[in-house]
Each structure stands twice: as structure tokens, then as C-alpha cells.
Length: 272
Image 1 (spheres, rainbow, N blue to C red):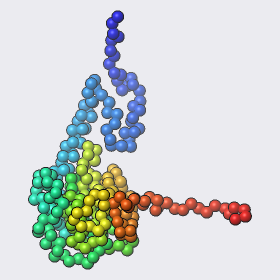
Image 2 (tube, rainbow, N blue to C red):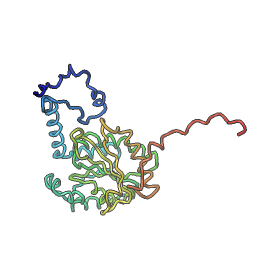
Image 3 (cartoon, rainbow, N blue to C red):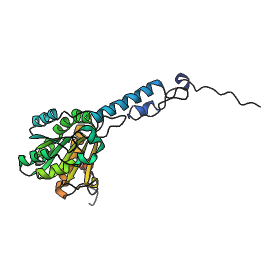
């Protein structure tokens, strides 16, 4: 008795409609890639290579700090450019610790500002994607600042930080005398989103704060969380952080619940 001859996989036309096509319309994730023999289709191999190249470019690209500072000034903020202790991009990528502390010259620059105490310090940092900052930081700030002003919150001088990690905001916020610091930073690029901006909020900024003491809003970009949605969340979190005196695991994002209107009153019950 011999084995039945193997059959080649059916072609797309033979297989009928792709059942995953509808799902792919809702996510940039790589699902249902298909196959060509024992391998991926050529279009998927080339798409993966392109996504990987875009991610690498995002990590190594230099931040246009002057453009970011000009954008902040256009929103009515005082802006200053600072650097971390990492002297170059290659050092920054190898030494995360240096990206968490200011350079000596930047410390002097912040001390020279002598700003009035403010509720919030805003930091724009390159992180691991300068592209995310170039594309999203100023439009998001433009959506956030009116909400903070409407809540009566003051915003101190804004800082554009090069070769920066999230924790650099702790030292910046402390030196500016801010009650809280909001760091807008380019997130680690994935193979579907090289332009994702994140916001990290820390109450009582000072060196030594850890990640559990921060709140994060991720995926701020036109193809992700919209500027208006992210600004609403950020304004709510900032207001609650200042009211309660904390951020991090003890502060849950309930901004969506805060926007729900109460149900309309129903007819009075008999005998009520």
C-alpha cells in the first residue's frame, strides 16, 4: 500500500475569500500572511524588510531640537534645549543610564532660568524615535495646553531634551520647581509603528523615581490614539495627580468614565 500523493496548497482563487481580510483592516499587526510553498509570499518578506528598516532609521535619526523648540514657542511656551549626559547617539544606545541625567552645561542652563513654580513641566524627548517627536509632539501639545489652561493649571518652561530617557524628566522637573512633569518621548519602534509617541507623567519629580510611580499614555499618533483623545486622558491624569498628590500604580485612568453623561431621569414611580 502506498501513501496517497500529496497535493499542493490551493491557490487564493481556489481557497475562496480570505477569512482574515476583515481583521487586517483593523490592525497593522502581521496576521494571516499566507504562504508561497513553504515560505512567506514575496510581498510579505519585502514588507517586513521595509518595516525593519524604518524602525532602525527611527532609532538612529537625530532630533531636530530647534524645530521642536520653535513649535513650542509658537504655542506660547518658553522653550529651552537641553542634553543628557550621553554625548552621542551611539553612546546613548549603549548606556541608558547616561540618558537619565543632565549634562553639566544643561544643568547650568536650567538653573539660569529661575522660573516661577508651576503645576506642570513639559519635556519633549527624542527617546528611541525622533520621528515620533517630529510628527506628533507639537500637534499633541497644541491639543493639551488649552485643556490645562481651562483647568486653571500653570505650565512652566518647556524643555526639548536630546539623547533622553524617560527618567531625565525627573531631574528637569525638580530643577524647574514643577509639581509634576509630563515627558513626551519617542517610543521604541515596532515593526508596525516607528512613529509612536508616549507620555509619561510623574508627580513630585526628582531623581530616583521609578517606573511604578509614573502614568503612561502610549501610541499617540494619527494612526493610533488621536491627539484629542490623548490630550483628554493626559489632562484628566494631570488634574487628578495634582489633586491626590500621586501618580503611578495608585492612579488609575478613569478619564473615560468622567466623560459619561448621567442617565436621564425616568418617570416618577407611583407612590414615590
